[in-house]
Length: 159
Image (cartoon, rainbow, N blue to C red; front, top):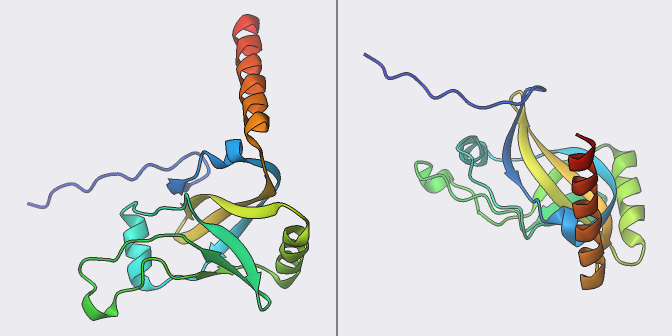
């Protein structure tokens, strides 16, 4: 008799989140968000299906007309042997040419950065949500925390 398989948790849009970088909202003043596909090897997809990925130190750069993500760590798949992938290799993002040009222009402005917010499955495809913004200083972070706390208090009072 076969054991029942675990049900995978999807949200209402059919999205299953693999990894997220929640601190990005605090560290960066986010101007815009993008959705991109990622070019992956088969063993990388299997590891992502298992829910193992680290994006907290990753960033996106445009190199030679291609958008690449650096610092995204997907550990090796234990049963892949010699066909395994490098855990920390740069991965190509699948974007339209005009989106890549727009991203390059946004990153050329002073202090701008592009960081991943979350990696998720949309159906059978792996997607990456990117945020383009500028880094915050320490006092800006404290102001953002104060604003968030005030909004929470107001919502509690109005309930």
